[in-house]
Image (cartoon, rainbow, N blue to C red; front, side):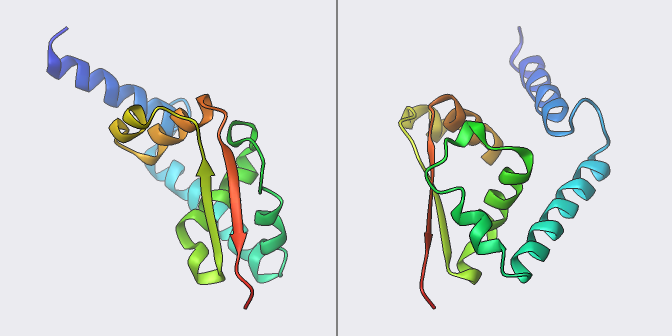
Length: 123
């Protein structure tokens, strides 16, 4: 298969995966924003720290969509709330280094039975 066709196939596969069976990009972005807003609202009610602490030690591949939303929210903005989130993994470092997006890296981490680590600083 020619290299250009291979890249197009890869991009199509990523789009289908990311946009959940063909929903539009805007619908996907709106859904992601709604989840982030919901997680932010949880944090404002002081339940947010408890929600992210509950993920500590969990197997990354077993997280539900809601738990992934909490995890990703604190991965992106955790420092603002004194929360550090990391994924402890046994994945092949070379394969992980070749990942071109967070989604690809997450898939590699899930296959490696990685665990979530959450550290909350005392303020």
